[in-house]
Image 1 (tube, rainbow, N blue to C red):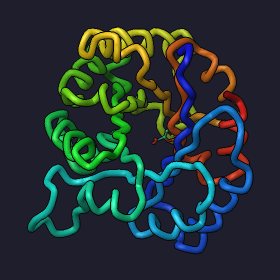
Image 2 (cartoon, protein in one colour; image 1 turned 30 degrees about the vertical axis):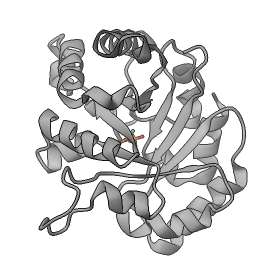
Image 3 (spheres, rainbow, N blue to C red; image 1 turned 90 degrees about the horizontal axis):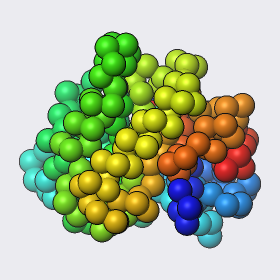
Length: 247
Ligand code: PEP
């Protein structure tokens, strides 16, 4: 999107030791530069160490979830304020793995997104259809519904990020056709503008799902693709940096 700086975000999921996360962060920081903004999203126990390992760099730090409430009796959960306090700038919300593993609904994702906004964190809200939904011709309607249910009112004002991640493309090595990615991103843009007015024009829409150095250039060149959310390939610094360099 013209005038929008691309964002390349790495979702490290539930991988690695503290030493590995720190080394990965150092590797990314050492090679950072170029047109894209970078963001890495380690697991909760590694956030502080990764922050320190990237000190002096402009790379953002994101978490992979937060609770909808600011504090309280929620064993095992982490608040947006805690994330902010350890130096996070972003938080991934509504990832399909959380929607599947933890039954997160659009309403819950919306509440979490509101909590993130209240703490000044930039939410990266994930949406995407299942393979059955795509085959049934429902992909765009499903994603439009997820957007309508998951994005709160203040989302655009705060520069929130949307990540389109078709569930069947995550970790599978399969990707939609370029035409399908472009069509979905155009639909997401239209939904954002419908919901938020002109502010929706400048919001970033990331593509996620089996992005690799080999396919990044073609995907990132598509209209309304303003960056990528990268899983597997973000665990190797050179691959993540190669994807960033494809912007
Ligand atoms: C993800 O889950 O955010 C993702 C895009 O994973 P992968 O790149 O491994 O498909």
